[in-house]
Image (cartoon, rainbow, N blue to C red; front, top):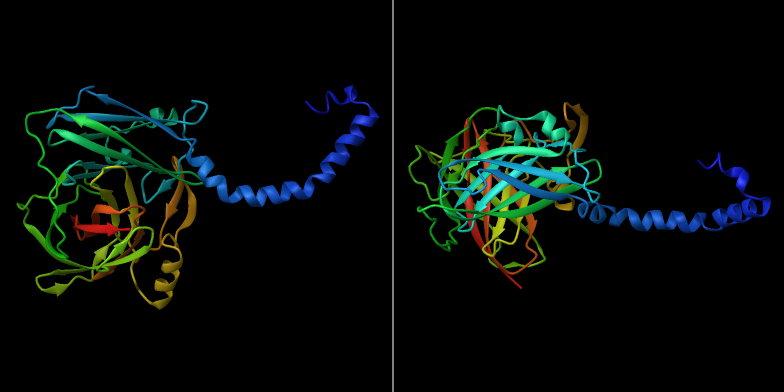
Length: 336
């Protein structure tokens, strides 16, 4: 377009343009450095998510289809997603009483619709066991940044969830749930359930006082039959997944644990909790995002995170031992 219209400019215009370009070249370079750090924030504002459900009114105990439409700021389909932690899109579901949890993905279902995904629509299925309010958080990644969005659904029904109960114990017996194949567990998990056959002992070592805005280290230690567990295996390309939710239900932080193999790893991860990730060759619907989790590890895993506000938080963990998926969950109080 510029070469076609170049004849419309006279010599004086060309000189002015060249002089102006040279004058601002250094300013342009400085702006590139300045805007690079803000690029992630700008990108995060560009993802919009709308939810359509079938049936439209969600009923407790009934199979529900959740279709997430992802669009950019122009309303165009948002499709440039990379596979990260072995999935193209993560959906975290937590009930308002912080006792029911789900972690599901489009790849978990045989009915996955690749053509719909090319149009920006990603589908999962879930059965909400109890009536009440649930928060749904989406995590996706592009070459530029990670995106986290959340929304709410109200579930109808006569069987309602209980109120939030505060439990600040640092030691617990937790359940194991048999995976459904390929790091898949697409059903809802009730953290208050005590009827599973698989039991594990877990203890956390956390600061006595946790302050908002400060980095906190929480170490998880696991035993079974009074013996330390040393053969945990990666779950969705991470040692351990975490969903951190406050009693305010005002968002979900999805983060991951760290295996402390040696001093070098410990030092690296203190500097950058996401260190060790690297890009691999493109997958079918995006680029693979892999980590450096050992094939086997344990008995200790560390969580490093910040709580931005004071309040009471539920930290819901998820990790894998053989074919069992565990949900060690602990509640902490954060002060100013």
